[in-house]
Amino acid sequence: MEGKCLRILHISTAHQPYDPRIVYKQCPALTNRYEVFCAIPNADPSVDLRIRFIRLPYFKRVLLRTLLTCPLIVWKTFWLRPAIIHIYVPEFLPFAYLYKWTGTSVIYEVQENLFKKMHLKAINRGWLLERIFRWFDVLARRHFYFVFTEHGYLSTYANVVKPSVVIYNYPELSFLDAYRQPYRQQPDAIEFFYIGWLSFERAFDTLLEGLALLKERYSDFRVHLFGRHTFELADLESLPAYRAVREQLIFYGYADQHVALPYAANAVAGLALIKPVGDYPESYTTKMFEYMALGIPVVTSNFPLYQDVVGVHHCGFCVDPCNPVAIADALSYLIENRQEAQLMGQRGQAAAEQAYNWASEAQKLEQFYQLVENN
Image (tube, helix red, strand yellow):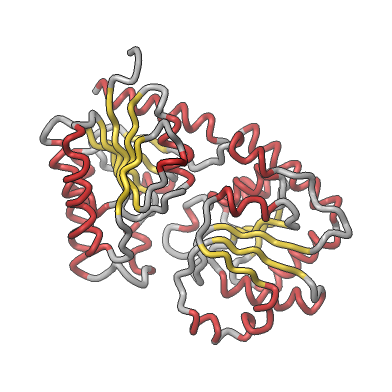
């Protein structure tokens, strides 16, 4: 095929306008072969001029997204007659059939195993929502193509009819190159870095307890925290550990990676702790690979899946995410052993360059699209 003959449309009602996977990896990877459109909340057209962004409103509750955003997407994009639509949220599954009935192929990307995770959600859950999700999820397995972000999801989705593929959310090295700096020197300030959702399921409460213990050994450190939080401020204020270290914490909220990643330059370590609940033990945390690619040690959970990366490559620590003492000990070791910490970062960077990077995944994605196109 020559030129951009076919239109494809990526659709999300819930992701952020600078979502790394959708906006910085998947859509750009397909621009050489396709005319790429992307409908996403609060889209920023300046991010990539090769992609035609369609701006959507953002609603936190799935009911509003279903009743308002999904029909708006159909109204704004149905005229495009895309050859393929790639959807990232289950609430759009019913609407995807409108496109399928006109000859469009539908790819449904599963980014979380809701069968194991729905009960953890503070909102967007309930008997009726779960019944509707399960019903349309079963239909999707019969009629749509699937992209999975983790191989662990294959046991739940063992009965899909059409072809599927696992595309890991490994980092785009060329994107991260600009933010990689030599590892911190001994006199530098003690700083730690975190990017991603902040929640107690992601061990933020245990991390605070670990930091409170660390403060007894090192009174002067800072933690840069980028990401939205799922807890209420009152819940945070009720934690004694938070009150002990609140002066050490800098909350930036959600931010584009261009804004966040410069703060990782002088970090002692990147934090990526997650509790063993829901689908977390079978899912990679993307930030683990991003920290590796940036050349900083990783402190993450002691899941076997993570130990097969961090433990094998000796690029950080895998600790019990429910044990604040283990967290404090790992952070103390990295502070006190700068040369070994630097070597950990170098080993992680080498592993990311050799095995855990977006180049191979982008190739898999392109090949899968060609399969869908010709099937």
